[in-house]
Every structure is written in C-alpha cells, then in structure tokens.
Image 1 (cartoon, rainbow, N blue to C red):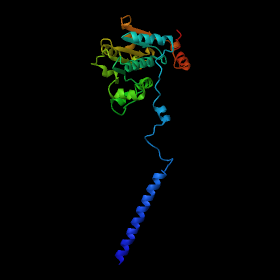
Image 2: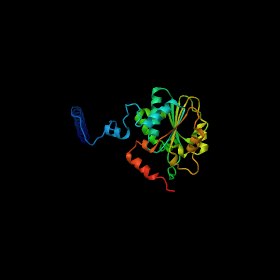
Image 3: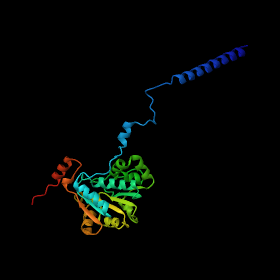
Image 4: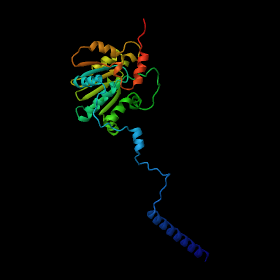
Length: 268
C-alpha cells in the first residue's frame, strides 16, 4: 500500500513539473527575457571599431606641401628614391600611401616593409612571440598608414597571404625585388654602409624602392649607410635624392619649433 501511494505522489510530482516546464517555455516564447547585464559578444560596437580600426580614407593621396608633391612625383617616376629630412615631413606616409594605391590598383603584387631592428637609445631586451610579433613593434606606424589607405581587414588579409611583407633588414639578404614589388626601407639612418649595400643590390628590373631616413638622427655608432649611399649614388640615372627641410614639417608647428631648438647651429 505504501509503495502505491509513493508511486502516485511521484507521478503527480512529475506531472506538475512537466506542466510547469511547459508553461515556462510558453511564457518565454511570448515574453522573451531581456537583461541589461547580458552582452552579445557578436555585436559590432561602432565605438570599439573606431578605437581599434581607423576608418579608411576615401580620398586619394594629396600632397600638403610643394616638397611633398615633388617627393610623390619622384617616387612615381624613378626606380629608387631617397627621402631625407627631419621627422614630421611625411616621408613615410607618402611612401606608404603610394604603395597602398599601387597594390590596390594591381600595378604591383607585393609590398615589402623593412627597417633595421635598432632601438632608439634603449635596449628593449627579449620580446615575446614569433618573428612577426617581435618585428611588428617596429612597423606599427606603417600598419596605421596602410589601415587608413586600404582598410584594416584588407591589410590583415594581405599580411596573411604574403601580399604585404614586413621583415627585418637582415632578412633581405638573398632576395631579389622584382617589377611587381614596392619596397620601403624606413629609418635608413640606422643602417651600416654594409647593410645598405646589401639592400641596394637586391633591386631587380623595374621595381619600386623608397629609402627614408633622417641622417641627423642615427642611433648607431660610426658612419651610417644612408649618408654613405647618398654620397655614392648622387647623380646616377633613375635615382632621385629628395631632401626635406624644417619648413616642410606638417606634423605640427610644435614639432618644427622643437627641432629648431635641438638643432641650433653651434657657435664657433
């Protein structure tokens, strides 16, 4: 008798739970619960995208100064162009933007970004990660330029598929830059003459090479490869040496004033 009563109570309890579950499911379909504390991880926040992915510039590259216009024209018409001058004159931006336009239009198939892995006056020590992650800190400025000109998604795709290559200068040995390649050597004042010679002898037929730097801001001891190359290659056909002046600084008026204070001619 006790077993039968227990069985009936269990059945009734199960029936009550089933009805309760069915009712709750019905109510949840009619009145879906909203909770302000629940965040959809797949949502696309415009504010976050703005913070981490700068909007792509819809405008073509336009020179801000006459000197920039001459520099842009020189890159377009010469195989090898040197951009020499103080910080803030747009040397890197113009070169990066022209490379992005050439890649997008199909005139080239690959952009190579390189620079000597030299810290500015301090030793960063061991950097975690693989080679790409270690070197990424050196070309972040160029990545910002490419993100602006091509879009962050396109840049990520090109990096994964080898359309944009960023590598230390030491890894250029043995390579040949062909006609479908746009190569930018930045911070060239930190190269040695031997490194610069190695880089220059990578140039193949009809490729596009831009070398940027400020001879006065070298972080290495002894003669730097940029100053040496400028003196050796001056006057060669298809080589253009463009020199920016302090008056060409477009970053800000304050930068121009700062450079004036740091580079005051010494009294004899």
